[in-house]
Length: 105
Length: 303
Image 1 (cartoon, chains in turn purple, red):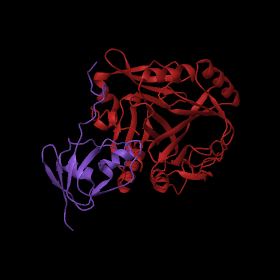
Image 2 (tube, each protein chain N blue to C red; image 1 turned 30 degrees about the horizontal axis):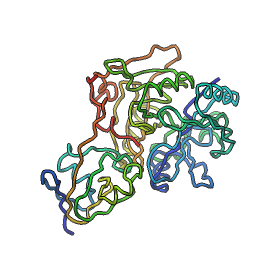
Image 3 (cartoon, rainbow over the protein chains, first blue to last red; image 1 turned 90 degrees about the horizontal axis):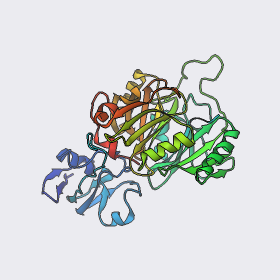
Image 4 (cartoon, chains in turn green, orange; image 1 turned 135 degrees about the vertical axis):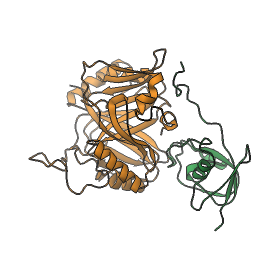
């Protein structure tokens, strides 16, 4: 079976998806800084991104983190998305919590 | 008088059967019943009440509610008056709102979490019994967790939630984490003689950070890590130690992405113990003592 490629829309970087690998796992191999590592079970939503083009299969995702309208617009929880073709993805900026960094008032 | 402990958590599951398998085969709880709505009740081997963890099928992850056990039915009258006196809307639920549970009070905390207070629950006994018992029972599965320990709740206003649990529900504070300007980031609160029964952290309203199962010691934590790895459970961090609470820990995720913890150690706090303060510049050492820095997930991943 062929290995699909995932490319990041903003900078064109590409990674080959290993058989059975999730979109999240492939992108983390490309660049661990690209996407937060959360629950990896479709519950917390920190790995949410938008598939701009291509086919994929999406497992169970928490409806509070991925709404039906987001789904329809191509948003996925990448930990539950398995590529079924080459994909182009849009990775949104990472969330910043106001109190998360030490030393800031 | 008052609240004795965190009695239970009701947890939302994206795939109920997968969660039942996980909480029985990996965590090692036993199923004690299923109600007509399909909710599944479980308990640890050293818990004598009917259940501590309830799994409920849902389209989302997260905490449905937490339950706090009070000493006697008189406490329910006391807390109803006290909460209503402070302007909290309280509903009295008849016996049977959960399997084996007596009458309960139902209200929302300032962090948006639903809370149940109850005094009575059917006693089914521990696995080792109460007469000349062995230290642990044969035939445990997976980690074999003896009991639920504590829960960490997120709240937009951590101070307000902490005040609620301390002033209205009678919790004491063992430790706190504060910003340079003195604002509260997180608080560790207790009613039993463990370092925390409930903790509060500044974060998204109504969300849960994790709930935790008690283990005996570091050996058990190491064994738990083996079990988690064997079952390919998604581990967040650990085994490691918390500076705050001195607890030995592993964070990991259930099949719906709810964070679980196995916790051992800690120390005995008392109502008159001085509150231990951690400052924000030491947050790394406070949360993960060995790594001395937070992982990103600690402050961003909630369900």
